[in-house]
Image (cartoon, rainbow, N blue to C red):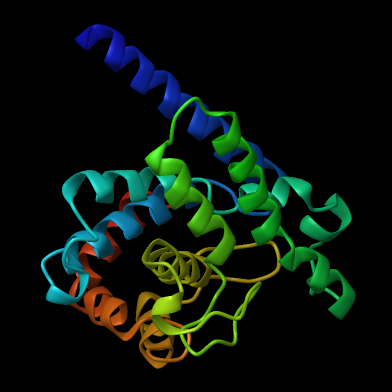
Length: 220
């Protein structure tokens, strides 16, 4: 029985990675973006686990599921046309509107997978929240729903900070990376606007750990 459970877990993990890689291959993001953001989410969640504000929301198992789910945050990009997704320069306003649909496309795809499952799958629920809401902002100015504050699921708030930090510190075809200090400053300035202030505090307190993850999984 234990061996069978282990095999089933391995199959699930490999399937998640395959789906996540499918979206990554089609995008301009390369290398270890998935692994870095996964570990940033894990680190931030672990740091806030003991806070009374998050009591009951974060257990060791939940944090493991959050990290697993983080891999699927951009799965909806599979549905974005190549001429937009892989464009080497800035998007036009119309192209940007199409790009923003990836959040809903991703959550819709995961919801269909949920319906096909024979029983509830916890990580799919988290993955759906992350895919749908990781571009929402604390002040309500994000997309696709314009949610604000704690109306944004915690999983998505964690992913939002991890994703932005990685975007800032990574080289893309259309930009150079910024330094750790510069990225930290941008995250700090986004407290209460883009990001949950409690998560920003956790990020600042764990900056050295975050930097180690960035260095360990740096792109070639």
